[in-house]
Image (cartoon, rainbow, N blue to C red; front, side, top):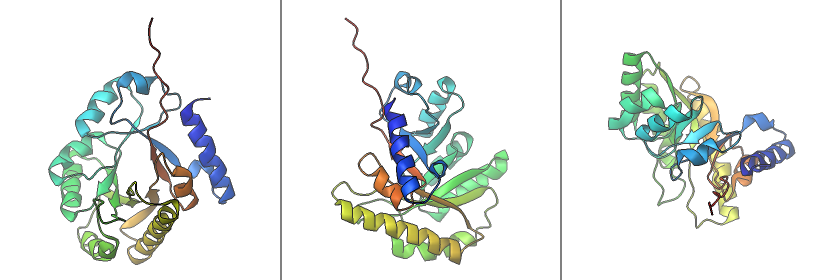
Length: 224
């Protein structure tokens, strides 16, 4: 059994204990520090996290059929590249980025899903939780037709304790529920991108639908 399959099995067990379907969670594999050969050997790979849109373009030539994700903050001046290559941008925290994505999608006849990035700790990049309501008010006035707000995302500071992580993930779930109630025409998805190698099972227990892992690659054989 591969490491990726082991991760999926643990997630499945957590989902069952939480009364959820295992199919409700996708595992996004972080490829930002990996070579294409490592990815090609990973059985069951479906969703890939890239650091740049150019990175996705290069990998897509050798790994067709994958879904491509970006979890770091996407700058507005990179929106035109994102539209052509990415399936989901999990790092949107500015309305100007939404505007640029909408413009480029409209020009190309494309559509893209985004998650709004929430900064749950002071050092993190993203939208402070207390500013989410105002951000949604502004975004709702943009008249988005090609950009789907699929949910929220976050990445927690490594220094947080398990208890603090659980509280942060529970708060993320509450924020998504509030956003869907207050702006049902805008926030149409239920996606929560949160959790990593340290705590993906904990994140799933609190409602994560997307987790990002990297420690699933098998050691490379050394030729003698």
